Image (cartoon, rainbow over all chains, first blue to last red):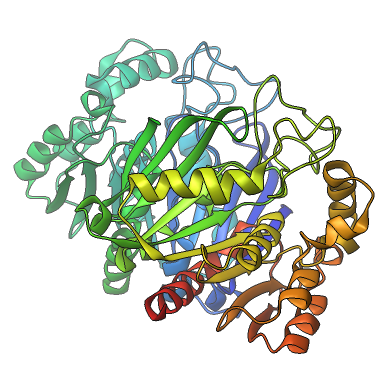
Length: 279
Length: 279
């Protein structure tokens, strides 16, 4: 694991690491924010943040404005890239597939299956590497994300509740089986058998596995230009059906971007801190 | 003046405008953050932020994380681009000259004099346009900036104290006449007569014009990779000589970038608010 960037930030450090991933079969990068408490070796709660389509490990670190409060709360933030990268990796025909669009699942179909193993990368390889190398409290790891990464956060939380003790999202793709972005990605990565899709669809997973968290926080802008892809109402119905407490907050005038995220990111850090303190 | 981008942010709006500048002889852009108070038509204090080499009107808006506190304080933030732009504008041989490197002065030498009139652009054209179009309290306008833009903020404040009632900077180029970046820019834009350079050099201006502000705030990282270009000690000496109160804060471990700026930006917004409330 090679440290390739380091910047002091709110008395902590914003870092970027690079390593050869055996899961993705290639070089990968992740960013991490270490609050001052972590630099002193104190055990800290940690959050994985999964970014959306076209983003990289840099996006949240630069645009979300989370370090100020993470420094005060003593939260470690782990920010992976959104897909495998590199010359040998399929580029995709558009920004909604291929590099920058890993969808946090393991592809089973050619030509994607070779490198696009983002689910295993996050929950096995990166999870292990970060817990081994940084002072993270083992049972105080949460997950959140935005858009495609909101889908990733919800689905990985419901698949691996032993690894993620709290979950929230900004404008998540709630039902990828039922929207154009998800249909394109899932048919490409997983093939045409829709029973396979349901294993990676937050709405379907919540209906199948039931209530798992004491509360889930979702923020959604009402002027989101991609609203038709997101289906927050289906998530709300699924949560109601299984008795999963959901704080789904709609915000007038906010769109899909990071000016929206930065406006509410503090609430998410506080939400996770509270959940992870309980756990 | 055409609105080309608008994003709700902390109940205010982050906007980008474009207009045909008669000073720069071409299209130009600026970003502005309007806090909720301004959207309601209340008169607000305003800060001009001048960015550094290679930056644009987007840099501070995305990377500095100032909107959260600007929203609470009711501060308007005005963020111009760093130079004229476009096909007809000299590109320069490197990132420290030409487009992205206007140095907030009026060039007198060919081929630069045609478009590179950033001083007049800021203090006349943009100043007038923003005060006419947004609810800005006339005697509550401050200026701050970073690196080349810190030079810009200090020099424009000392040249136009009737327009700017408070001034601060992050890692400013304090004595451009005495560092490689400044020597290259000033010899290109102003020619070889060094008495001309002194009119645009913060250290020389403060020595010539004396104390003008009740206090000046400067933050400087001690691990700044461009430290040798900045000369904060010369600024300190000049301020001491003329009795100008200066809070020059050195910060261990911080570098020249926006992870440094975001760590201290709240202090600058509070400093200006206090100064502008007094004035």
